[in-house]
Amino acid sequence: MAATGPTDPEDFFRATRRAVEAVWRIESARLIAGLARLVRDVGLAEELAQDALVVALEQWPRTGIPDDPGPWLMATAKHRAIDLLRRQERYRTKLNLLGRDAEIQQQSAQADLDAGLDDHIGDDLLRLMFTAAHPVLSAEAQAALTLRLLGGLTTGEIARAFLIPEPTAAQRIVRAKRALADAGVRFEMPTPDDMTDRLSSVLGVIYLIFNEGYSATGGESWTRPELCQEALRLGRILASLLPNEAEVHGLVALMELHASRLPARTDAAGQPVLLRDQDRRRWDRLLIRRGLEALDRAESLGGSPCTLQAEIAACHARSPSAEETDWPRIAALYEVLAYLQPTPVILLNRAVAVGMADGPDRGLRLVDELTEERALRNYPQLPAVRGELLTLMGRQDEARTEFARAAELTQNQAERILYLKSAAAPNRQPE
Image (cartoon, rainbow, N blue to C red):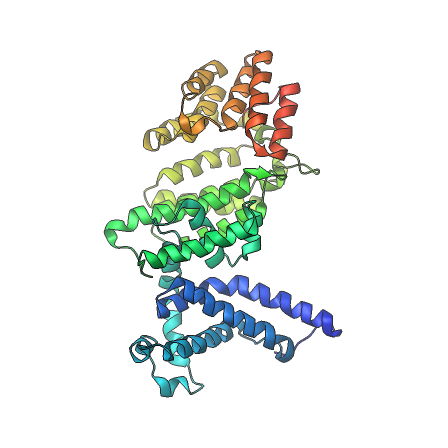
């Protein structure tokens, strides 16, 4: 493909490098997944893919970007995989896994192998997702490895996403790959008996990434939309690969509907705007439509806990204003969800819904039942919810104390400012 654009050599090189990085972000998951199936080692597959990227950075500024950059990267990585396997004692056996022998490797024709890779790409991406979210890894390691292998993020980008030093992010990724190797985790789909638990793990990692983007636990900004976008992308891929899994479509629906609010969740200065105060004209109507379509698909497949959460989000999406929100329906949905998944956070959200539907005094009684929950002991939203409900009851002094407590607990600067403002003059409604 003929290169067009900047004529200055340095500008051309920078433009080409940006193009290479964009191609990498799009193709890296497919590339690593295909290679991992061949070499049976996720860490080695990533190294081979990175080697191909380095070759591209060296060659494309001189030769121009190929018309089909993805297959170019795959072919380059496969050549390096074959060279590596040739140096290993069992080269001949492993080479057979590539569906070719040394004579074919020396030829330029690779159509048969490429077709085989394309036939398997859906399974390969699924295997990569399930491998990156293997239960032998911690939740933090799963998230970092998923963003690295499936999101194409650099170590620096992952570090910034989770507000950790870059060496810490690098250690998480290295240790995760080493843990997979030490545990003998194979690059394969889980057995039918393990499928449910492993799928829940994959979905949990994707939602963890989304939540960190939707409500950042630390730092200066209340939201990190780029993390939400990565989680949405992974969820959509998973939905296309597992079209008959209600839980997958439920999660996608939930993320689409929540992501639709991102443009309105902060003001022009980047400060938080709670749900009641948001300008709903700024909600993304395309994401709402996509979320409702995914919700319909999930419900047609039988539903799931994620489907219930998405239905709650849909109640907000369908409400033309905060005042017209169907809180009784939301409270009823939370009752069912709390029965299926009585986690402390879901029970806290149920208390908010009950407080809005049946009166703040009832909501406060439910919140007070959660004050001894160990998981909520340092959770800033617990005193924040108490503050909101106490405000609605006219108990302003007690509300100020709760908002001040929430400000002490949060590690997010924007959220801290929000709570301090509420402590000075509590007059907000629960989100």
